[in-house]
Length: 107
Image 1 (cartoon, helix red, strand yellow):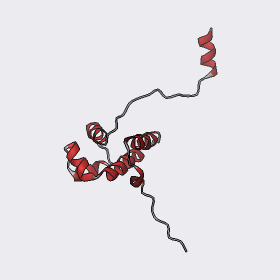
Image 2: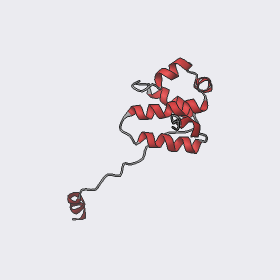
Image 3: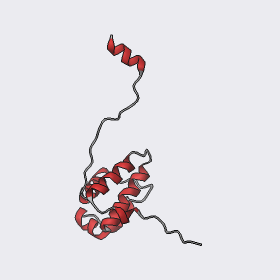
Image 4: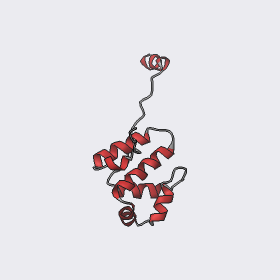
């Protein structure tokens, strides 16, 4: 019988580009815990102690803020994201168009 090991995303988060794509994928999920877990994976990959130094936050505070179900403050999330070498930006959501609205605009 073969042994299955638990997948650890942190093992693959080795560049800012990969980290950004991973976090973008997590942001697509409506569950905020998915994003927090992804940020936690990135923090683990980079080293929680170093991240604490880079953000000026305590390690315990970081662990608590990145726990699924936590409600971290925006400034905490922003500090962590920037310390991880990535940024956040907004882009329009492309929704399905309503044919009736398209006809009204055309008139």
